[in-house]
Amino acid sequence: MKMASKPKISRKKNAYEMPKKFARGTVLVDSSKVSWIVGSSIGKGGFGEIYCVSKVSDNVKTEKNYEYVLKIEPHENGPLFVEMHFYMRNAKFEDIETFRKSHKLSSLGMPHFVGSGSHVLEGVKHRFVIMPRYGEDIWSYYIKNGKIFPIHTVYRLALQMIDVLEYIHHCTYVHGDLKGANMLLKGDSQVYLVDFGLASHYVTSSAYKTDPRKMHNGTIEYTSIDAHNGVPTMRGDLEILGYNLIHWSGGKLPWENCLNDPKKVQDSKESYKGNAKKLMKDCYGNSSHPVSVQSFFDMVYVMLFNEKPNYEKYKKIFLQELKSLQKSNSGPLDLTFTEKPTKGTAAKKTSKPSPKAKAKATSAAKLSSTRQNSNTKDATDDAHEHVYTCGNGNAKIVLNTPSKGKKDDYKKICQINLDLDISIDTDVVVNVKRKDKKKAPTVELVNQEEQSSQEVQIIQSDNEDIEATPPERKSTRKRRQQNDVVDEVSKPKVSRKDKATNPKIVMRAGEYKGMRAKK
Image (cartoon, rainbow, N blue to C red; front, top):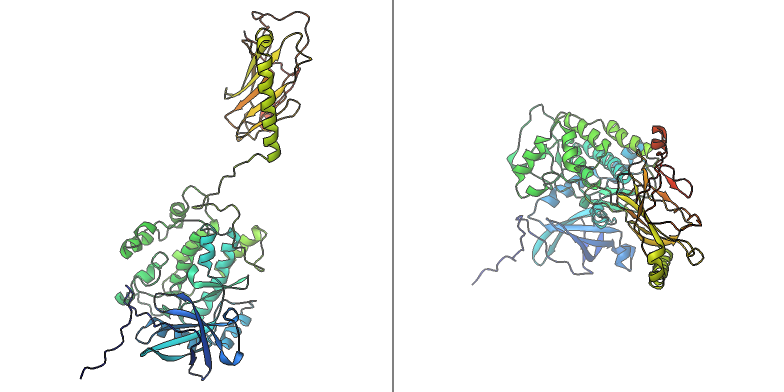
């Protein structure tokens, strides 16, 4: 007679067994004899699976309104055992409320214990723990938002997590795995820290003893230096928070390219210990970094491994920054970033012409083309072209004007070739933003060969700030010949003060003293 074989249990690469599937509508009873009805699966972790649940007595009709979650794993696993006992000992609702009130906090992102128990599913014994149901995790918002949060939101998340860590440390534990995926939003303003599968008592002795069994525990990119050594410390929790702050504010951790090698990651982190300035430079590159994050690491790096953090001092860093930004530490969290920069750098804004400008440009272009074709023969003999070079020669103005007898048939058109192609009447003053406002451009007038075109072209390649109004053509009785030479006049005297304070030069008719005419 063959012995019945033990049901096979699927295993992941981390060697932890994954639980069997719950059927929707399954009813289980916790250790307090409370009956729960199981809904759909809403998530998976490395150790178990999460379902939405509701008390049978509440008679809730739709899963959307289920107010609790159930986390389950095979009885042979360890992480949920640790988490369940942490909740049972340290997460009573009354204890959390007492701490919150004593610290004068409006809210505290610490989940409270609801229930636990065991259940046999397909012949396999499972343990479960029940907690309140929260919303989406912060990591999801981070990814959707282009891997960055507004800096004031980063500060508010830091303040909320420092409060939760203070409570956990108050219970003589460390969390050991703080990250966006373990932070769940409730409502629109409070974040709750979950997943206590790596929670453990922190070191209180004076001896720093490493534990090979616990080495590199946690999420490798955020794991603290102490956790790499297998030593649970309060400063380690703060260090983990600091690495998250770098990510949330658009930085990149220097060891992200070697996450498959925990020892290399550890060595990289240790190379920055005591040098927060270098860490900021390597995380943010040429972009400016949040000074408050550097100050945070400066404080973490000087802490002793068994030292209790000065939580108020850490919070003061971010409270001052919020005050300087004129942002409140209450109300809905702003989890969106309108410009969506990448890798900590501000995205460049690209100007786009309005539909009205596009229509005007098209109309003017057609008008210019028509006039050029109709007046080619006459304009060949009668037009004069003037080229004005401004500043360092990168900005040029080409002015083509007809000679005697063509004034009545002529209407000046300005065509500006900058970042946009827009045609406007000559009476409109064109403003182009100029980066360098210290040096005012100079203007030089040169008389060139006659051309048939009757338009003004402004070619701007240096983003100089110029207001340009083409000069009006002066009427003359005698026809100007090509070989006429205009006497040179002295250039206008511009003081250094004017150059510094008046970066715009307005070019109008009659104000071309200092222009130089050449054949």
